[in-house]
Length: 267
Image 1 (cartoon, rainbow, N blue to C red):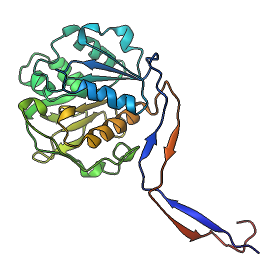
Image 2 (cartoon, rainbow, N blue to C red):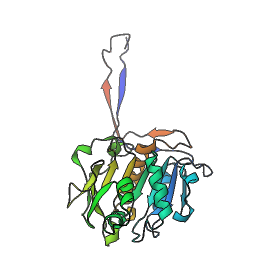
Image 3 (cartoon, helix red, strand yellow):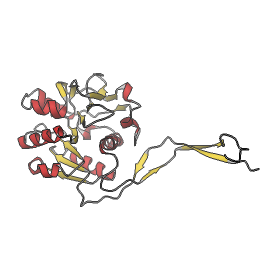
Image 4 (cartoon, rainbow, N blue to C red):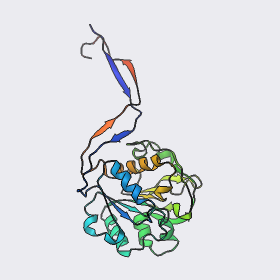
């Protein structure tokens, strides 16, 4: 009787998502370029590199029609100190969110603009999901301990517990207090209970994810890429326009005795 060995793959890998990109489709990601050329280009490039179909508009070009054509919206404000000035854009985004639209907000000044200047309180409460601005620099981002094993922190990529920020100006980060309806995903090294990244209504079931920093201020490009990839996947799954095609590469393997019994012909 033959004894069979089972090859057991111990997978400690990252998921490489491989898709073909259809540039004519408009069903995955719409990026609003409200930055000062500090973040949107990398966000567009990175999201497209994951296989998502990505289109972009400036605030003046946004309409309810193109909002409704995408699975997720990314509002990129980067280090723009004059972000969110377009009134129609803010109102359209608010309505989009109130109707269940999924969104990522990115930028190091949005919290300051909406809380300290006190000109956009509705946007602060309904979209950013913060209650107040605390300070500009909170040091590096630190994942909240009870979120380390969450799906968004581990799939498709394992996110670092600490994301280092190259803080060069007040426009690179806003440390904010998450409102009572949202959860902190990453705090900061100086303020553990304040938000570097928050999710609404929860990290496990997000509709809104707010990066309270300039995407281009992240020290390691791989960290920002993996964060964006995991965030998009958690919000909308695999690219809608392309279908699923994944490849898992094992980082280690070993040979083990087959189970349960090598002499049982039904094994």
